[in-house]
Image 1 (spheres, rainbow, N blue to C red):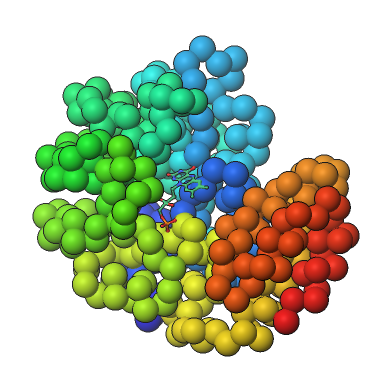
Image 2 (tube, helix red, strand yellow; image 1 turned 90 degrees about the vertical axis):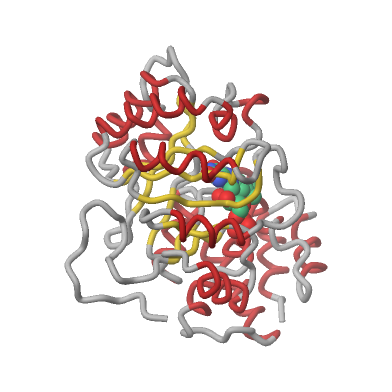
Length: 328
Ligand SMILES: Cc1cc2nc3c(=O)[nH]c(=O)nc-3n(C[C@H](O)[C@H](O)[C@H](O)COP(=O)(O)O)c2cc1C
């Protein structure tokens, strides 16, 4: 697959026109700037996203110091999309303005997170319950966002067909592209992402549609692109488990690695990540926790699940790294 093009970039989109971007999904607790930096240097997604940035009304500052830092940590070449999650229109606009002041060029709003009521004040996917309010929020954001503005959306709140009713709203509000994770909000992560909806969505809009959900192998990714006609792919859990999937999809790494290649990948991945985490998460205990968050995603690996689970039981970083080095 070609991801290179000589045509001039369209300022509105974070990828080159005529190319098929492979994006690293936003993932709370995982896609901090340390992990993003490693992915950008190593496997080069065309676009990366921040974890969601919580936007609450009445906060002293529109963005916390940590969020400001995340929004400003861009790779020298690979575009960063800053994702906001929130409900309050004014606070969202203030956060978008602050993120741009911190250097953000591309913004996205989370319309998918299914855990709204518990800790996000009915934001994320819950916003799909009120399309009129959603239109007001998107219009307000579009007014202040200078670069690309995208939505990351489920297929509906509880109706997988809802997305087709929302399309005219997204188009009228000046959204530049959609990322679709075709499960409903109430479905959370149950069942499979229904990419027949992705294909129908591609056919129903002239906006670029990025397909997201359940891509864990090269074959699945290539089939999804071919069958849906999506403008690109966004990879979440599959990329955290196998960063080289970006290169596999491009034909630049084996589509199905053998055991030795996979062992080498995991050794490099976790040791490099540990080094990048040391200056970010101060103290060995913090680094250990953050490295384990990534490792936990590999705990059911068909070949290395057992040693990974052993690493997850380590109480100190040196013993975890010793086990890592013995991975063959
Ligand atoms: C641990 C975890 C954290 C996530 N955090 C976010 C987030 O911050 N923002 C967001 O839009 N989606 C978030 N998601 C959803 C993913 O971006 C993605 O849409 C979902 O996992 C489906 O894609 P996948 O099957 O490739 O993982 C998260 C998912 C997981 C598993």
